Image (cartoon, rainbow, N blue to C red; front, top):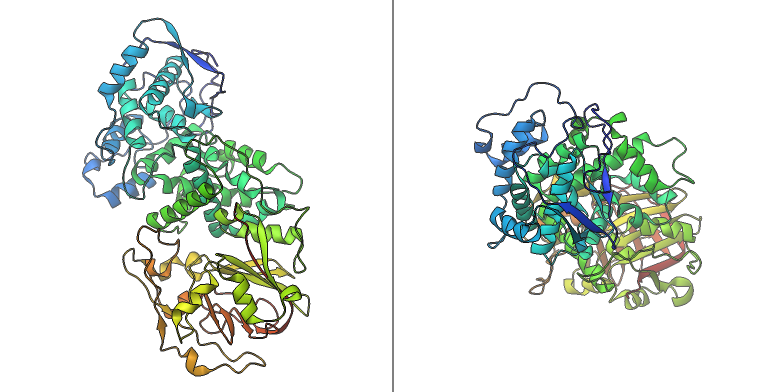
Length: 603
C-alpha cells in the first residue's frame, strides 16, 4: 500500500473497526515522505478512532501506586476511557522497563532519521529484514501516521541489525504511535521494549527461533489450560502446531483496535505472559462459539482468524480480559523454563537464530506409523497431548511385549537413555490406556535400596479406548494447592504401592518413611519445567509421578495408584490417585494383552 493511501471505513463502535494492514514481501521497498510532525494524536485519523464511552477515571497519583495496584488498575481498564491518559502514561510506564545499558533513544533516532530521511522529498528504502512476510497493521493511523510508522521501522532495522524475525514489533510500533508526541518518542519506547533485560519477562521475540519457541510454549499452555478447545482443534486440524503457530496473529493484527490497545495497557506492565493469557481466553471463547457439530471439514486457521476479527459479537474487551486473568497460569519463571526447553529442542532440530521460517509438520506419519496397540489416528491424538518440544520428533518404538517378551528388566534396558517415554497398554478387554513419563527410567537407580518416585509435573496419564481422556498433574488444574518456591528444592516421596494381583512385593523396600532426594542438577543446566522443587507442595502424594523397582512399576500415588504393573508385565491395577486426580483408566484389576513403550526419534 502506498504511503498516504486511506483505506479506513469511518467511525465505528468501540473496538469493532476492521484493522488495516500493509502486507510486505521480500522484494518490497518503501517510498517515504520525509516530512515530520509533532503533537500527541497528530498521527491519528480521528474519524477511525473508536469512541470512548463513559468518563475517564485516571487517578492523579497513578504512577505513584505500588506495582501490584498499578497492574490491577490496568487490568480493570483504569485508563481505557482516556486517550490523553494513555498518551501521558505509556512513555512513563516504558521508562520503568529495565533494559540494556546502551539502548538507542530519541536522540539516536533523530540522528539516524536525519541521515536516512534528511532531504524533504520522497525517498526509497529497503524493507527491514524482520518484516519480510509479516503484516504491518496501521489501525487508526492517518496517511501521515503510516509514513511515520514506516520511518520508525526502517530505523529499528538500522539500529537493531540482530533482529531477524519479529511479527509483534510492527503492531507495537503502530499502537504506540497513536499515543506518541513524535516519531522519536515512539522509537525510544519501542527501543526500550526491544532491549528489555528483565529476568524471565521478555517483551518482544526477535528471531524465528525465539518466535517459534513462543508458539510451542503457547501450544503447551493451550493443551493444559484449554483441553476442550485443544481436543476440538486436534480433531479437525492435520497439524496442531501449525494452528498454534498463528496464536500471536490472533492478537495482532487480529483484534480490532479497541481490544488491541486494551491488551497493550497490561502488556506494558506485565510482558509476554499477558499475551499468552489473552490468546488462551480467545481460544476458550472460540470453543464456546463453535458449532455443535465441531470443526470437521473446516479450515481451522481461517475459522479462528474470522472469529477474532468479529470478537465484538462474542465478548466485550472488559469481559475478555476478566476471563484471561481468571486463568491460573504458571509463574513467569516456570513459563520461561518451558520456553527455553522448547528453544533447545528447536536448536536440536537445526533451527538457528538466523533461520528463516520453515514449515513444520506433525511428527506422526499417517502412512508409515505402525502399532499393535493404537491406530495412527489415536496416536496422533496422544501426540497432540505431549509437550510441543517432543512432538517435533517422530515416535520410536522402544519396547513391545509382543517382540521383546514380558520382562520388566528388558523393559528397563530398552527404555533407559530415552527421556521422555510414552507407555501404551492394551488390556485383554480391548481397553487402551497409558502414560506420558517425563524422566528417564534410569532415574530409579538413584534411590538406592528404596523405591523412590521421580519425574516432573509434565507427566500425565490417559485413556484412549473406549473414551479418550487425559489426566494431568493435579497442580495444573488446581495451582492454588501449591506456592512457587524458586530456590527451595522439594523432596520426592518414595512409593508405597499396594500388592499387585499375583505379585509378592516387599513392603520393607517400599516404606513411606524413606525419601528419595533428586540429585543436584549439573552446573549450567536448565532446571526442568515443572520440577517439584519449584513448588511448596501440600503433601508428598502431590509428586508421586513414576517409580520403578524389580517388583514392578507405579505411576501416580496417594490414595491409590493411577497405573501399576507387576514384574511379569501381565497384571496391573488402576485406581484414582491424588497426583493426577484421575478416574480409573480401565477395569480396576486388568490383564495386559500388549504393552508398548515409545520414545522420540532425534534428528
